Amino acid sequence: MTNNLTFGKKLRALRILRGFTQVQLAKKVGIPQFRISDLEVDRNLPTPELTRDIELALDRPGWLTDPDIHTVISVLTNDHATVSTVTKALAILEAPNE
Image (cartoon, rainbow, N blue to C red):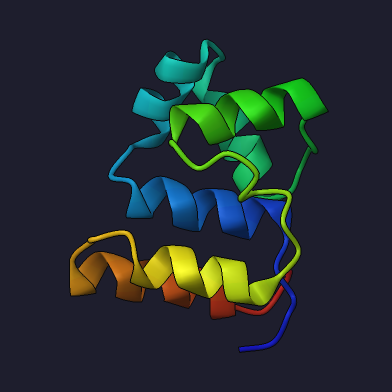
C-alpha cells in the first residue's frame, strides 16, 4: 500500500469501518450530510475543530490527522470489524487519488 492517503480516503474508510452512514455521522457531528460527502471526496478540507469532532464521533481521536500508514493499518486490523468491512476500508485506502 502506498502512502497516498488523503483526508477524504481516511474519513470514508474509518466511517465505513465504524459502521456509520454519511447521514448518521453528519447527524452525530451536527453538520449537513453533504459536508461529509464533500470531505470524503476531498472537495473541501475541514477545520481543525471539525476534524476533532469527527474523530470523537467515530471514537478515534487523532486518527484522521496521523500521517503514519502503520497507524491506519493498526486501526483497520484491531477494530473488531468484519472481514468484509475491513476489505472495503482497505480498498478505499488503496484506490488511486483522483
